[in-house]
Image (cartoon, rainbow, N blue to C red; front, top):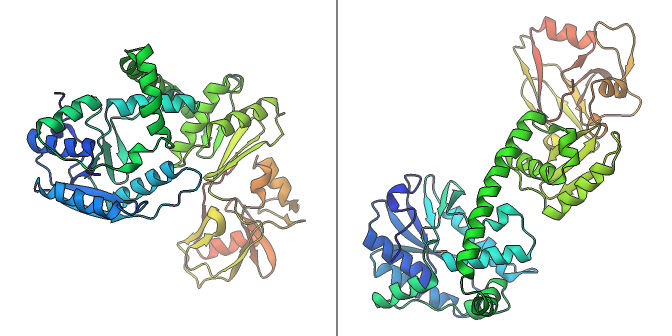
Length: 429
């Protein structure tokens, strides 16, 4: 019988061990194996009741009894599932969201995915057109919420689990959802895999080997994407588009995914990235193709790529600021801070860009169009109205913390104050 891999002494974190416990054969085998192999950390089970059929409550109570029989506490969480287009995917999202909310810092969550699950996952992702990272299959260990997610049964086959259950006389719960061939994973496991194995008996070993090779390829690509990103990143949200990346769409796509992840964003769907890269390859240096998705927007301009996390900032806004406390600007534009002021606060008005603005920066002889000042600093067109304007008594006296009129400069000097604009927007060169 295989061992747990990784074994309990090698699990990350120092918090609880939380077993995602359906009470089915796989999770029941995992729980009993933990009890026989030894686990010195606090151990608890977590059962998620999706409420998708009338007997889900009975299964939750049965799971609690199975856990208690091993002297393990079992928590039952009830979730609401919005099926949408894919009930299978919706239930999975609801389940993992509930597990993550249950976790504490340093916890490790164990799921009972096994080798047959791995084979089915790789095949399912192949049919959906996944790349090396997806075809690498289920990771044995990864960060998850405030802790980690570990799958110690990935070396076990379904037959190993069934033998363990019979050997120990265990009575797992049967979930009727596992019989529904309408679910993709069930269809692959119950109908497709038996046909494939009759023709190619070694399919399981071959697919698992391909998965390992794809994981290795994905890790190598991730290292290359990180090197590309470090080389071409001009600012956290501005990327120089080197010729080698422009001419190699796959390499550029990997770098874009890595860029999004580094900014804490989920990457856009693969097909959307491919379409965007095609537009970039055909665009002139001043064309502005854009890729917008739920997490943000990536634009092309002047052989650079620009990332705007989150929704677009509002186009028109005005805020009053007495300058004695930090001022948060709308739409993630940042915040204004005034440090070291020795005089009473001054009433200022901070707003978005307006048409026809002119400013005479301190030390310059003439008024200049604000749009020209921003263009000369290489600020991309869609960000120029986002740069906060500073008005005093109805007069424009500053743009961001870069251009100040003599009036604003003199006031800051007399007050021994320093104005700072903290932002993730590109600040130009």
